[in-house]
Length: 169
Image 1 (tube, helix red, strand yellow):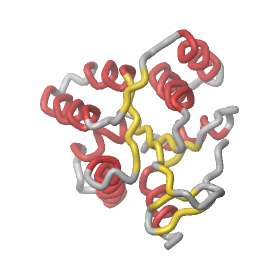
Image 2: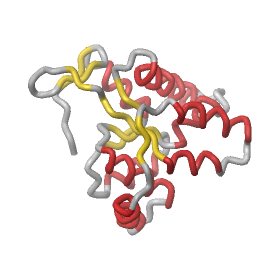
Image 3: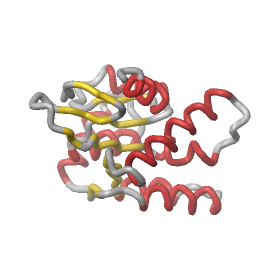
């Protein structure tokens, strides 16, 4: 797993103290979260973290959102057309999109052997293939399953990750 040297005010520095753009992959759970019922504190706080991270990826450009055609395919399966369109809009903000390929397919098959769901396996494989710094999901089961795997990237809840990054200031 890649280790970044340090965070200061949300900026990421490498060993030479050069600012680098943090590469973030958000699964569909994250992209849908802002459109979920916000009556539960956990959902509302995760939404705030996700929106803040998306702003860092878009408005400030400090971070880079990495998407994939796998995200698009999963979003298109959502029967709620309003939610589907909003999630697609967020996904369109990705700086770069990873295309499904044989390497992703093979790696996803390894994750499937660990009983990780199909789309989750594909997302993990695509994020790893893209060399992201962090894969964000609101799915606690996926985070636990990824921890049991040999994944080479960080997998985290967006709220926990956001708090960690900004508590280093």
